[in-house]
Every structure is written in structure tokens, then in C-alpha cells.
Length: 491
Image (cartoon, rainbow, N blue to C red; front, top):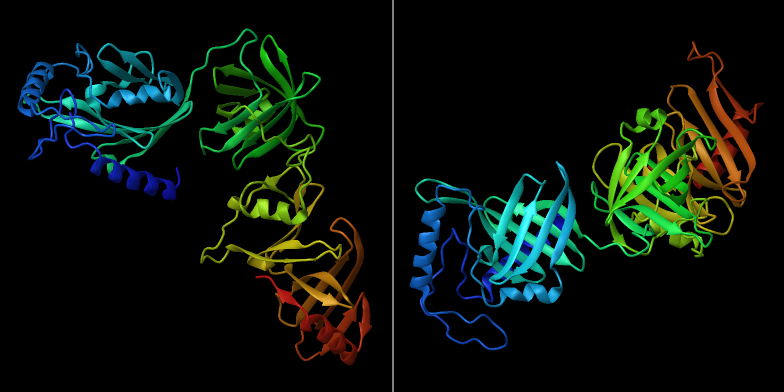
């Protein structure tokens, strides 16, 4: 959950708690806020408040004393029905939701009862977080349920509360928890509604999010021939983007290209526990590489955002180079490493816009390879990174390689050249330039530089070279004046 979203949640919770209900029955082990004046009738569907506040308080005090020496979840009476809170069922929230817990699969259940409704959260079959009813619900506002739950009760009747916020949307619930107030809750888990299987079982096709980063990480698309395209994006580890699967009695069995080479084929299987996909990759080689061979993802959509089998963002779409570069900069797609085509990186993998020495920033778009389409400059250490978009992918076109390979570009003889500079030693400068006509089509190279005739004698004078041949000082100076006058530094 991002900081921006956390602030939004807190702001909405503050608003929700400040408006709407004048008197709220807190919980079977809590207290009732007593206003100075009780509003008897509120129109437009607002809560109608009873004026028998003292009677309600007395009833709750009896319940609190009865439960002081017992587990608050055991032997608890059905909660008091609270007018207005039954609206939860208009959202069709009743049912069982599942999530990944420390004990395996957790279960969050919402069900209607003769006295209102119950909400229970079991981390496992033997342990629970809460067993709540309507009396534990403070308010339902803006698709959020606020639960104040007594987690401990001392012998003198004092209760220690936990604060839960259940944010619901369609068939998903995100749960937040805090120990002091609703305004100080943190993300706890994401639960998806358990669906009944049809005659043909559960459908694999769709988009699934990672539990680790809560972003799309598994895409499964069914082909016309009954096979499946499968992509598994393991955050900052590896992208398996060419999986081909087939349904068997064991699940959705697939093959995919692993790290190292195109010849490294690995096998795996995907099984479903309702809306949770469990991906298992077989083989000691993968286990040695990743340290783990089982991964879980939860389904968020029946429509996959699948790349095609070559790693394109969408086999059926035509995306311009400008659009592809923009997709990279906003974090939607990855770029392919120039030194290893099996490795990829997202912009979030770079140290962006910080004050640190090795940080990067987004630069301008320039036609660096003379093909009529712009490339993207990522300014940064040793000249940064140049990115090219072609064939529905983003590629690393050039990158700085240290003080001996500092990257820049220049205009020379009417074309853009990529230049690598080495000025790391006193009395020595060397430059290597490349001209492209398309980022995958190198058409010319050039080398020039200057160095001491005798590297051990600073008085020996300088010699100047161009493509291996010694040239005069005047020739060298004229050449440098043309090249460096148009050089653009991308540090």
C-alpha cells in the first residue's frame, strides 16, 4: 500500500468517523458514546437513535463482566442488530474470502444471522484474529467496515482493543490493522472471495497479483487450440515470459525458458485453490537460482494483459516507439538488458531522482540512431542509459561503463554518433564513436585520442591518432573542435 494511498485511507477514515452517526454502539465489551441530546428521527436513511442510552450501557456492562474471565470470542451472544449496518449485505459481501497467512490459507467469512451479521477471521483452522458481530462494528462508510474488537480483557474488566478496517470492492477485501486507533492502521492482507467451481472446474485464464508487491505478476491466456500462454514476473528476480501450458489431471502443466540461454527449458505446474494460483517450478537448477520453487498469486481479473510469445506487450496491439518509452517511464513495462537478452529491468530498479552519486533521471528524447524515431535518454552515472523502442519492446541501446567508458552523444558530419570517453589518466585521452542507422544496425565507428609519446616522461610530448594513424596537432585540434562543440553530456 503506497504512502499516498495510506494518507487517503486515513483521511477518509477521519471523515467517516466524524460524520453520519450521532450515537454508536461500540462493541459487546465496549462503551456507548452518549451525546448531550439524542436525535429521535433522522431522514434520508440515516441511523435512528434510541434514547435509552443508559439501558444499553447497563446491558453492555453486564456482558463485559460476564466475559472478563473468558476468551472474548467464546460463548459470546449473537450481536445486537444495529440499524443501518445491515446495508453491508446490499453489497453482496456475504461469503468466504481467502488470503495467504503465516499458517497457509487464511479465511475471512461474512455471514448474515438472525441478529444481524457475523464477521470472522481465521488465520488457520485452530487460530483466529477476531470473531466479530454487528456490535463490534463502529460504522460502515465509503466501502469500509470499521471494527473495534476486544483482544484482551483483564480481571478488572479493562479491555485492550484492536482496530480493523475492511475495505471492500466487488469480490475483494483489503484488511488493515492497528493497535491504537482507526487512524493508525497498516495493511494486513488482501483477501479474495471464494467462488464455487462450475461443471468444468475453475478457469485459469486471467491476471493475478503478487502477494509481495500487490501488483500484476502472473498472466495466463488461453489460445484457440486449447493451450495457454503463461508469463510469470518474479519481482526483481526474473521474468518468465514464454511459458506454454496445457491442462492435465495434475493442473496446468507448462514449459518455459529459464535463465542462462534459450536452450534452458524448465517445467512447472499451476494449480488453483479457488482464486489463488499456486505456481510450482520444478528442478534443482531453478531452486539454486531463486532459492524458492513455489509461488502464490491471487486473481484480480478474468482478462489477462498478456505479452506474446516473443515478449511483446500485446500481440494484438501496435504501440508506437514514443508510447513504448512512456510505458517504460511510468513503470508499466520493462526494458531488455543490452548485455544479456534474458535479463530485464524496470525503471523502479534504477535509483531515480535522488541526490545520491549513482542516481538517474529521465532525460530528453532524441533520435540517437538516425532512424527517424526518438530514443530515450536516462541521465545518470557515467552518462546514464539510452533506450530504444522497436518490435514492440524497449531495449537498452547504450549505457555508460565506468570512467573509462563514459557515455555521451554528438552530431558529426550531419549524423548523431554515440561516444565513449576515457579521460581517467593524466596525459591520456581516448574516444570511441559509433554511428547507427537503426539501433541494431551499426554502420560506422571511429577512434581518436592523444597520449604521451613516453608514458613515463611528461616532457616527451604528445602524439595524436585518428583510427590508428598518427595525425598532426592541427588536424587533431580541428577534429576535436567539430566533435566536442556538438557533444551532449548525459550525466
